[in-house]
Length: 414
Image (tube, rainbow, N blue to C red):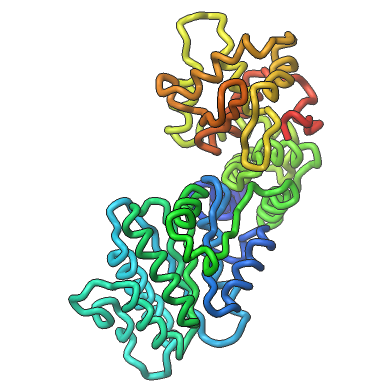
């Protein structure tokens, strides 16, 4: 392989290390989330306890679900951890059929599985377990009781929020049933915050059995680890100012740490360098914008579009992205004022841009913001968390953000 071919190969290899559009499925490349992993393991170790992992889109819930089985592997004994995705048409029965069919696939890939040597690998297929009868909360409990005699089942149901009300009610019944009988099996539901609120609100009896595990945005240290670990695997280095820029732009979302990390490593490798500098990161930002999801790009342009040449929509939206937020991602109109002043050099009163916030919360601008609260006490947050870093990157490329503002990690952008 020639030298140019080697550099090209390493640039391709970066796509295996940094995976912005694919959840992590290997423990070796999974970074951070120690607190959440420990809580899941604590749940598994307690009979009758189950878990609900919830958080914003893009915080890495599915990646965590993918590697739960690997982290539990050191506990001893046989463990089987199938993960299935729900869709809007799924029922309680169809979801559990997916689960048990996935268990059969796992056992066929690993002949020893969680049964005894020589056991028929099709024993736990959905058709063998339930026949023509659809799974019910009680039949699921009976099957898992028998299954847990030879293994520890960890049953991961992702995108739980996509299920309709009736399947959710049946899941609550099943979890309570498993808990009441202290079955040695753990159900892990994965979804957004609204789904856990609705489940607990409508089915108070399940609250004691369901441990709520929030996946917040990653702290700076964990985003740093993602970038550094990836570059180390590529035998590359990164300057401190470049690393700080990536961490701030990611806004706690691993998706953007991977996206910018991917393009920064390739920009450097394409110039036959193994050093990621601030200049390299700035080039990577432009490429990351081009590579962002088309739905994000369309929503951004729909939100700031105006027939008036001199309008504030772009500046207000950027200020929203840089505004200081609470732990749930909400900000008030007054939190927008400081970044607006730094971006425009003018001290705008809140009434000047209050109407822009209202329009961003309206369908005509795609409801890019979600509004909650009462008049004069409204709070806002981005409807899609992935939009916030995208808006900030647009501001960087357009040179709207003052020099040193991002590099210093200004409080308004924290």
